[in-house]
Length: 207
Image 1 (cartoon, rainbow, N blue to C red):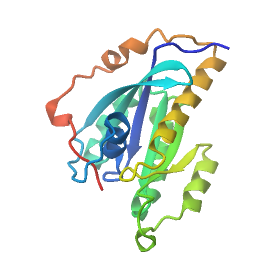
Image 2 (image 1 turned 120 degrees about the horizontal axis):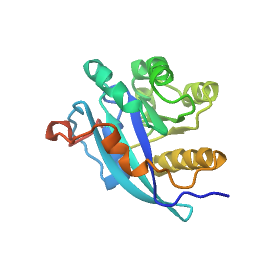
Image 3 (image 1 turned 45 degrees about the vertical axis):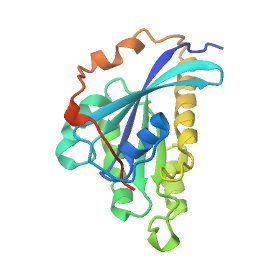
């Protein structure tokens, strides 16, 4: 069986504004939770080196802006993405209803076989605050052949499982194609023409 060694997987985090995209990236990469929030301007990314079942893998995680005015910019970064975490907020019905928009956007802009994982954030909320039942998330995930997790950035629930599941599925797909190390791994950021802008950095997350 072919295994990746020190490969880089490009992962996008998509979804409406305020669902917790920046928060899940910070929670996973920095092991920190912010209870204040500033919207991501355009796009930002972090990198995390993980041990995936004994194999070192670098995740390059792109935190995209959910506001409508930035969505045209966001689509440019689908190129080369091997995985997508698609998020909604279980306390915000509109963010769940808008999954159809994001799934259509993925179909139009991402590779046909891009790996997707669905994540419903804020599962720690009190029952009166919840407006999207877990079964609804499970249903849409089943319909689009995606793993599904309800997560809590605040309480650190299922965050690592979400990213590791995505990484494993990316690795499985690459093994099926006979890849060992991706020749383009180390040029992902340069290939996208990305230069880090201080205005694009994020300092918080929706709580």
